[in-house]
Image 1: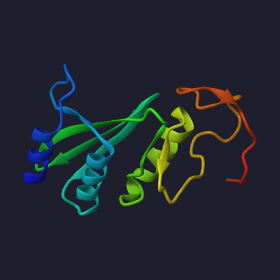
Image 2 (image 1 turned 180 degrees about the vertical axis):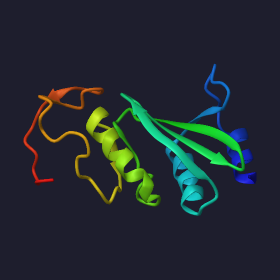
Image 3 (image 1 turned 30 degrees about the vertical axis):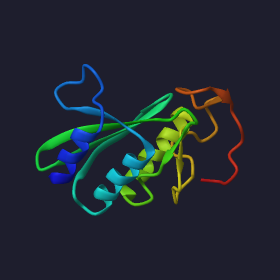
Image 4 (image 1 turned 90 degrees about the vertical axis):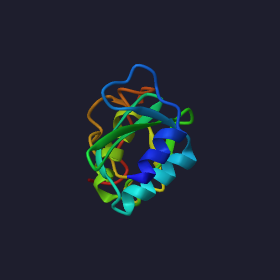
Length: 135
């Protein structure tokens, strides 16, 4: 739990988040935290996004924290690269928001199979394109 205490004290909290702290991380801290996740020091509770950010909820010995990484360039370091349970969630983020997990070993589409008429319906919408590889 010492690593979580260090992170909780090092990162600025987002205002108004209750009952669990939400912290704004930079890329270096994001990578550090997913290293702890990979080593089994905590449990991933969720990975989700919004048009310009990705969020990672973690639990360690009953304590929960949410890490937020701003993605102004629509990219973030892949959690799934070191923690495979995150792969499908990252694929959903790519399909829905156009957020690109850098270093992900699985770049296939997860939800968008070319039938929506648009790409990234919750992010910057683009005209639908044909799927390159059959699913």
